[in-house]
Length: 84
Image (cartoon, rainbow, N blue to C red; front, side):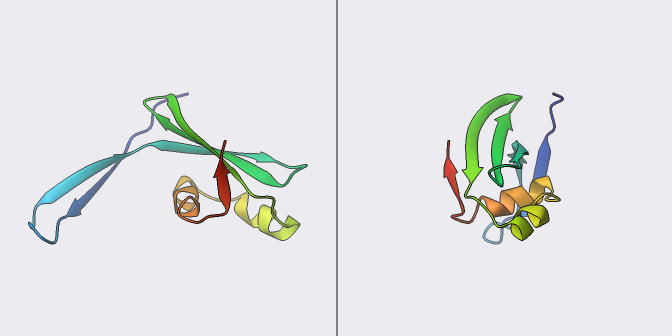
Protein backbone atom coordinates (compact mmCIF):
# COMPACT_ATOMS: atom_id res chain seq x y z
CA UNK A 1 0.00 0.00 0.00
CA UNK A 2 1.46 3.33 -0.98
CA UNK A 3 1.50 6.10 1.56
CA UNK A 4 -0.80 9.01 0.82
CA UNK A 5 -0.52 12.23 2.73
CA UNK A 6 -3.19 14.83 2.75
CA UNK A 7 -2.17 18.21 4.04
CA UNK A 8 -4.79 20.79 4.87
CA UNK A 9 -3.71 24.42 4.96
CA UNK A 10 -5.87 26.99 6.69
CA UNK A 11 -5.59 30.45 8.15
CA UNK A 12 -6.23 30.91 11.84
CA UNK A 13 -8.88 33.56 12.42
CA UNK A 14 -7.39 34.58 15.77
CA UNK A 15 -3.75 34.90 14.72
CA UNK A 16 -4.16 35.37 10.95
CA UNK A 17 -1.32 32.85 10.42
CA UNK A 18 -1.18 29.83 8.13
CA UNK A 19 -1.45 26.46 9.83
CA UNK A 20 -1.15 22.96 8.40
CA UNK A 21 -2.61 19.63 9.44
CA UNK A 22 -1.78 16.19 8.00
CA UNK A 23 -4.74 13.86 7.51
CA UNK A 24 -4.49 10.09 7.81
CA UNK A 25 -5.42 7.78 4.93
CA UNK A 26 -8.89 6.22 5.16
CA UNK A 27 -10.14 3.10 3.35
CA UNK A 28 -13.58 1.47 3.36
CA UNK A 29 -14.27 -2.19 2.59
CA UNK A 30 -17.87 -3.28 1.86
CA UNK A 31 -19.50 -6.39 3.30
CA UNK A 32 -22.28 -7.08 0.80
CA UNK A 33 -24.07 -9.79 2.78
CA UNK A 34 -24.36 -7.66 5.95
CA UNK A 35 -24.61 -4.31 4.07
CA UNK A 36 -21.93 -2.71 6.23
CA UNK A 37 -18.56 -1.09 5.60
CA UNK A 38 -15.35 -1.52 7.57
CA UNK A 39 -13.53 1.79 7.69
CA UNK A 40 -9.82 1.76 8.45
CA UNK A 41 -7.61 4.74 9.23
CA UNK A 42 -3.87 4.53 8.61
CA UNK A 43 -1.02 6.72 9.78
CA UNK A 44 2.22 6.15 7.87
CA UNK A 45 0.81 2.84 6.55
CA UNK A 46 0.09 1.62 10.11
CA UNK A 47 -3.51 0.86 11.08
CA UNK A 48 -4.50 3.25 13.86
CA UNK A 49 -8.33 2.98 13.93
CA UNK A 50 -10.98 0.58 12.69
CA UNK A 51 -14.71 1.27 12.53
CA UNK A 52 -17.77 -0.56 11.22
CA UNK A 53 -20.97 1.02 9.97
CA UNK A 54 -24.32 -0.02 11.30
CA UNK A 55 -26.30 -2.22 8.86
CA UNK A 56 -27.86 -0.19 6.06
CA UNK A 57 -30.84 -0.51 3.77
CA UNK A 58 -30.11 -1.74 0.24
CA UNK A 59 -30.61 1.77 -1.17
CA UNK A 60 -28.39 3.43 1.43
CA UNK A 61 -25.66 0.80 1.01
CA UNK A 62 -25.60 1.28 -2.77
CA UNK A 63 -25.41 5.05 -2.29
CA UNK A 64 -22.48 4.77 0.16
CA UNK A 65 -20.54 2.45 -2.19
CA UNK A 66 -19.39 5.44 -4.26
CA UNK A 67 -18.11 7.43 -1.27
CA UNK A 68 -14.76 9.12 -1.58
CA UNK A 69 -12.17 9.22 1.19
CA UNK A 70 -13.47 12.65 2.18
CA UNK A 71 -17.05 11.33 2.27
CA UNK A 72 -15.93 8.68 4.79
CA UNK A 73 -14.23 11.39 6.87
CA UNK A 74 -17.56 13.21 7.01
CA UNK A 75 -19.37 9.93 7.79
CA UNK A 76 -17.14 9.42 10.84
CA UNK A 77 -18.54 12.68 12.25
CA UNK A 78 -21.93 10.93 12.60
CA UNK A 79 -22.93 8.25 15.12
CA UNK A 80 -23.81 5.58 12.53
CA UNK A 81 -20.81 3.35 13.28
CA UNK A 82 -19.02 1.60 16.11
CA UNK A 83 -15.35 0.99 16.91
CA UNK A 84 -14.05 -2.49 16.08
